[in-house]
Image 1 (cartoon, one colour):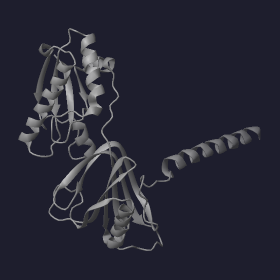
Image 2 (tube, helix red, strand yellow):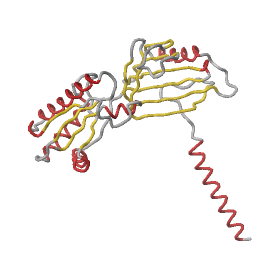
Image 3 (cartoon, one colour):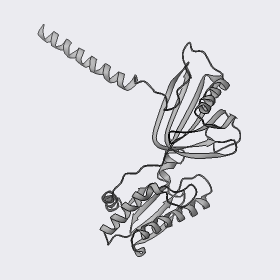
Image 4 (tube, one colour):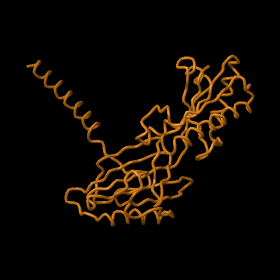
Length: 284
């Protein structure tokens, strides 16, 4: 009898633990994106968030690639929910953008733009500047309004926390390290927010006077391969110049640009392209 009670108690405990784990794994409530909620009669069927990624937003002529915190939501009509038309869904978000003081970049059916991921469907693209943040929004309704996609990017530069000792450890163990130094779009001008990374490289090299490195520039596969190679070379040279300005002997430095030829991630995804746009330090 006592053994039966013990087994029953253990069974209840195990059942409770399994129920908690199942609820945590499969019943976690999916939440809307910051700034924009879903339509009242619709439920979230997919939610993917990236700390840093990019997305190409269509403006009616071409696309603008925006980097930052990226949020993707797929919405579907709830059971017994009242279906909205594709136009109604698009206009709801269009009005939300306008109420926030934003501008509408495109509203209609996208056609002939290979740069836009959802071209061929109706889409609404808007941009909002709010509390010092730049928000880019794309809403794509389809299936006569039964479903729609929402993509939001809060524009930000990639933050990289790395120290001189961390760089040296990576160079000694791997022979190279990838850094995400921010440049002006399409140019080789290093942005002010990347100054701390340059300073850490200078500190590392001053602490290790025998160290020589090659600075390599890399891009994603967007745009013309020849132009990408030229841009990557110019950016690598810009980093070398910044290090020389910080007191490093030019004879300890060299540079090279490989454009899109040496990806480290899948260029078919926004996250992959963000990883491929990098500067690498290679130990000589």
